[in-house]
Length: 200
Image (cartoon, rainbow, N blue to C red; front, side, top):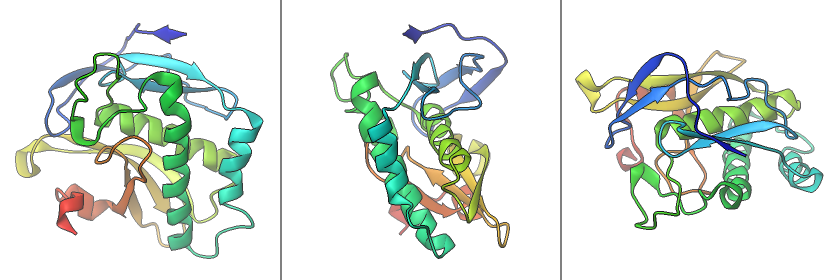
């Protein structure tokens, strides 16, 4: 079921190229699990859909992390793969399968777009599910972070994880790339300085 009812406080986000007004919604599941979670899209969570994964779909995600990750770097690689796979599963269910990175449009009005608010919200949901299912041993999910436009361009938001052994914060940013592509994971402080994949 698709819902467009949005409530709550007003937040402004340009996501680098498109101006959007975001209302926080009480319909986003804040304790997601594979059998019951929210995905939002249509630019700044204007549309929210409640979904569930099949047992086979979730077992495929779990298998990526087994028998376990030996280092934080290895776990971040697994996180990238898991987020990409989840996007590939969810895309056909929500009409976001053809979503393009950096707010590019496909030209097809039936394709649902996702800006950085959608992407960071959904990635945080995926990360939370991985954490709650005991698949993350080196990292913990943190609140999304927004970098401002006064110094480094338009506001832009990312999901965030914290490396437990040294408290290093990492941006997990899926907005730069097309749906189903592995997100960028870079040190949050570097990301806050305006980092993008073109800085490699």
